Amino acid sequence: MRYTKWIASLALAGGMAAAGTGLASAQEWRHVDNDYARIERMRNDIARDRARLDEDIRCGRQSAAARDAADLARDQRLLNAQRRDVHNDLRRDAYYRGWR
Image 1 (tube, rainbow, N blue to C red):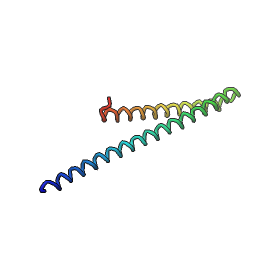
Image 2 (cartoon, helix red, strand yellow):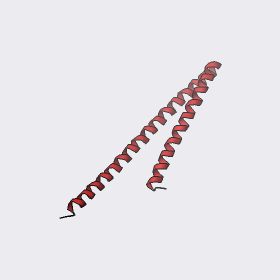
Image 3 (tube, rainbow, N blue to C red):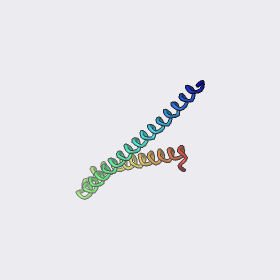
Image 4 (tube, rainbow, N blue to C red):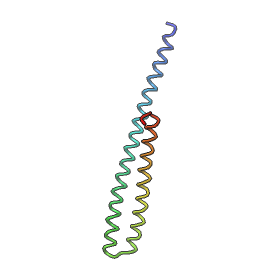
């Protein structure tokens, strides 16, 4: 009887810790899902930029083509950075979980 409260408290604390870990991983996966959605939006934006650039080049609009090329390069750099971020997040999570 003397240790019953102590054992029950430990069991409760362990259960709360396990539930907290599951919640954190669910939040992490939602974060990754949001990152993948952002990557998809960036890819669509890049496709529109490329189409606009091709149209400007075809029509001979040099200044518009230069602006579109700069916009396309910026979007491509942002996409690459976002992809690296997702990759690094997944690698870090796998490392800390021992999934090597």
